[in-house]
Structures are given as C-alpha cells and as structure tokens.
Image (cartoon, rainbow, N blue to C red):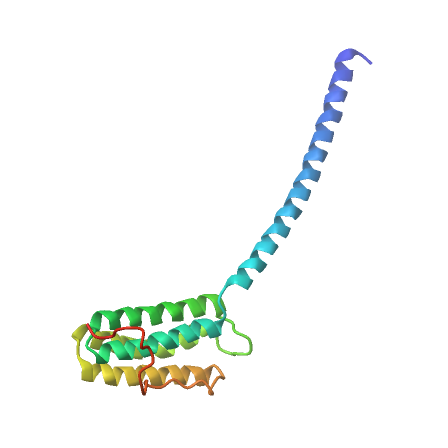
Length: 171
C-alpha cells in the first residue's frame, strides 16, 4: 500500500472515529440536559404557589377593595381591583387544569368578567352606590365560579366588620 492510500485510510478511520465519538458525547450531553431540565421543572412546580394560596390572596384584595371604595379611596380601590385581576390571571396560568375541576380555570375565570368590569367603571366614576351594586355582582360571580368549579363550600361575602386594622383605608 502506498503512503497516499495509507494516509487516506487513516484519515477515514480517524474521521469515522471522531464522528462516533462526537455522537456518543452528543447523546450523553443530550441525556444530561434532559435530566437537568426535568429537575428544573420539578423545582419550579414545587416553588409555584398553590391555587389555595392564590385564591386566599385574591380574597384579601376583595375585602380591601370594599374597604377602600367605601372610604372613598378610589386610587387604592383601583389598585386592589388590579391585584384581583392579576391573581385570577396567575391562577389560570399556573393551575388551569386543577385536580378534579372539570372545566379549565381559564374558562371559569370569565364568569367574573362582567362583575370586574362593573366594579372598574364604578371606581373610575368614583360612584359609591354604583360600586356597592357592582361589588355585590362581583361577589356573586365569584361564588358562582366556585360552584361551577365543584367548590360550593367556598362562599365569599361582603366584609361585615373591620379586618385589617394595620392599614389605613381613608385618603
């Protein structure tokens, strides 16, 4: 065998070996990355708030919405309403398919759209009588959503007494 053919054969063997080595390393790295991604997904799932925590926060904002609007603190009321909307968005993003609830939360959430819109309009108009009616409608729609989600035992109501003595609701 002449030197040129020998070099070509060696280069072919080397190239084949390099490709095989590259393939083995690629498969190993791919498996390692998949394992790391799975571990990160598990960590994220464990870190995200549960639906009960999110809804509990919404419940607090619902009460603070009432307190602030009934004290004519419309800026704070607008803030509380925005927090409720953000909480509902977070609930649907993180828990759209929740346990035994048959309807996705992203569908159920729309049951509150009208009530939220009415409250928003009353806040913008700084109209307390309109707010009180809209707030009742929003509260009823929350309870209808809970019933549709097979959680009829969760009943929201208008606050009946002071709850947050550590926050000033007047302007």
